Length: 235
Image (cartoon, rainbow, N blue to C red; front, side):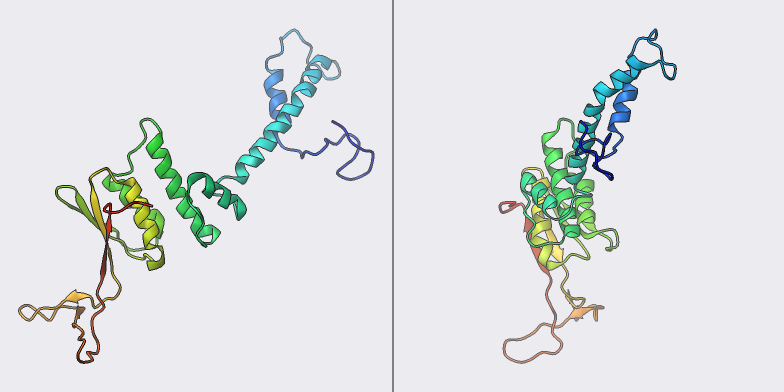
């Protein structure tokens, strides 16, 4: 549709309300390829072919707009309220995190949902997939993530670079990924002096000293935490 006679963007021969995306040209090429060969295609005498391109051009604009909408709600490119809307669809609120961090959580959540609902998808409860969830969560710069299987159906995770404020979010993701009946735990290292020392074979490097309720012990050890996975609701 044409609109106006003013100079600038809104002028004669300018499409009304749409940009110059590739859609019309793509649709023209596709449609022209289906025109019978006997229809003349020489310059100045290809009126039928040009007419076909005019007919399909608006469909190309619709495609351009649809692509813009899709890209606006692509997790890797969406920002702000767009990410919030994606989160509402997949059931994962922002919880005050920045776009960059929230995008990581959304990618994990979407991967879990797709794996659970698609036929022949990769199960998320495997050894490698649990490690992949943890690596995505803490990033590539974090240290070595260790998963130790404990027969018959348990495992222990050591995840470096994990912020305590985000611990429950990671535990929730792993809980959703687990097979039924499988239990796990995450070891949280709060300080480097959390190892038990020994009188028999010590001193052990980074061994801690027990504190006391009666007297001040300086320095006293900071005990690590172990958080269970799978014994409570995943939410």
